[in-house]
Image (cartoon, helix red, strand yellow):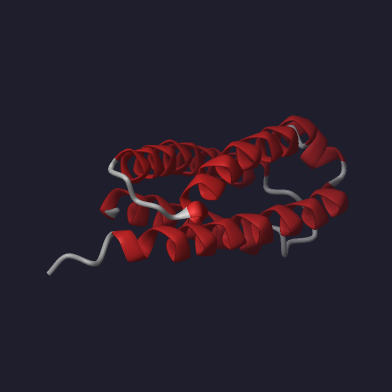
Length: 130
């Protein structure tokens, strides 16, 4: 769970950085590209780790329907993120910054909801260590 907390912290930092960048009237290409890369790496690692944690708990006989739902939602989240990244290439971001700003706000909100859900489902199974 500590690794998941690290991924969540990395994602939250990148989401906050992207939020600040999208408050500008024009796109800072290099900064946006760097933040999106950090966010993608953290999010991918987090998805892999969630699948691992859910599988481990389910294999150990934990009877929590929310675990399977979380694992399944993680796969759907991967598809949504891939679609967003595919639609909003850096070239498209620069070409239509105002629309990207709106799309980014929706995606950031979705990712923040996912983080909150992951914590609420998994944290009870992994109490904080001393």
